[in-house]
Image (cartoon, rainbow, N blue to C red; front, side):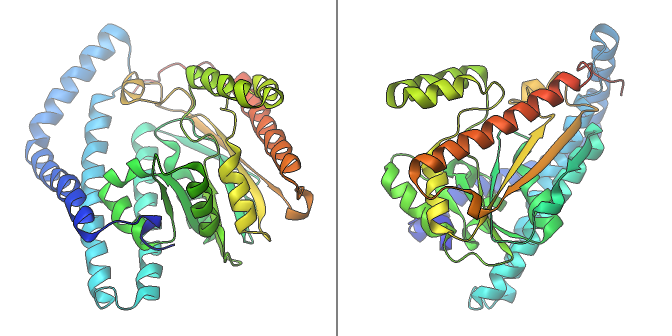
Length: 349
């Protein structure tokens, strides 16, 4: 699906990028020029927070990550421009897509490596031997603003699988995701287009998967919060009380939305389903949560499980029941990890 499944005029694309690209370039220039002075201020802030509240050094870490992000975005945009020019200004579409995919893995890997180093994250992965071969449908929980990089790093890059993403259209505000994402077969969900249109487009995205391909879906649709969990159950109560009762037993994840899942199953009839459950990013929804220092020194635990396509029912009711079973299993595993994890205490810098 070209252009991220978006039916946009060139003028719309240019107008959006005129709003999103200049702040990145100017931001990098400004942060680089002011970095020495900003670093001194950050050190003073961190020392005060350390003495008064025993907080880890977050101002320095966040300043450094801000510079890394702006530098990665700028370098990424230049790299994407170079790839486009080398492709004959888009004439060699297959070559352009392949080189863009490779760039995407390097870019995401660099950002994730920076986050691991700056915040002292530890990653523990189990079951990743089941990811290959494709075609696969990858379902991932959404717990924070940080876990978006996990599929690229742990699935696409680690196993050389060409993932097709179902993403919110809001993510087009990131210039690199905008440029790269529209060159590759992804789908950026547009609010207000209607459920039937969305399901049809998601199904089209899943069609034609090969042995090196997969589709990534966030069945929850948004990041988990207790309030969103309550509202999701209330919505289900109005439409399907039986599913609402099942959702009541899922504590750490939002009830999955079934429409997108059913669409990818229809579009990829030979694909197995892989569930990517993770724990460790919980409670990190906002920058303010990270500012508190809870992210420092965390262990991120990841578990992959795979279900052969033959084990997934063919009828709608059976598929919905399977999805809720899989989500309940992931929820139970997350609960076990939370129960077994040490109390979240900010670590010394």
